[in-house]
Length: 165
Image (cartoon, rainbow, N blue to C red):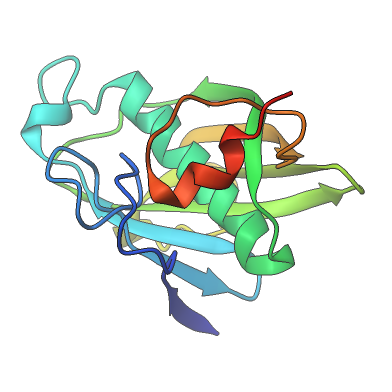
């Protein structure tokens, strides 16, 4: 199975997932049996070294895939608690990439998700063969708890997150 996913809030200005943020990544997500995948071609303006996607953008791609994985598989809103990225090889701009995430641990209030960034031509996905990763990552995500978080985001999508402590 590979089906398109949508966040469902057209007013979102999220840097990673909003199709309405002209400065954002405008990512498209696909749910698979194993987790979530993103197909992405990085434009030149997100490069760090010439022809290489900036490491912070790579981490953002992984974070977006991981959070959407939890949302797709468990219907939970999560925030990043910890993200560890292992940089194996340069990730090229202008080349079709596949970013994937799969849940490896689910608890009541947190999830551990892992995955990577692959060249799409190598068939990368949540179950990709070893040695095909350009990046591998593991992230601990915390279930969103509005009574515990106070964020200064003005987006209507996150308005419930502005609950005072």
